[in-house]
Image 1 (cartoon, rainbow, N blue to C red):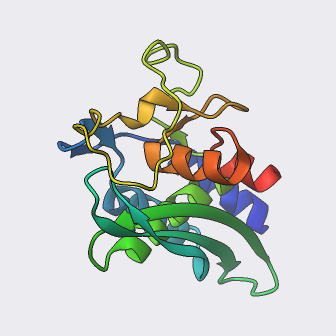
Image 2: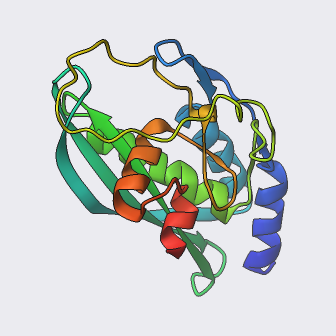
Length: 197
């Protein structure tokens, strides 16, 4: 069977991912890496496909939070190559970007997991539980704020990922992605649209 037919079967099996996790601190639901990668792995191995993943560090810097704490901000790129075990000459490659921020040592792990999620979402055309064309949260949209100095007043309420939208395609983005995008490109862009700039 050609790899295209095998991938079509994988895409059918992974066409939709439900949100099965909850971030209580920032009050939003998300699809856990465990459920996403478990479902993808099951679909790939059923077709005798296996993956090779290469990660690249795109950016790493210290940032100051609104409370004046220093955290590490990291952007990673992953390149996913899916190989056919039945025919090693057949393979496909796609990539994804992800960012992560942490006060400890988990910024790289967070950004790498996000990048891998986005690579699979784009490469396998996976529908997520949220709709980027939905009007919910539009009225609550606020542009990302940029201030490297600690604030003297109370920090603003944490915004959920749905309150930030990509200005090009309308996809929901997190406040961290919005901050990075505005700093780098002057407007709110999702990772896919950032790659096209």
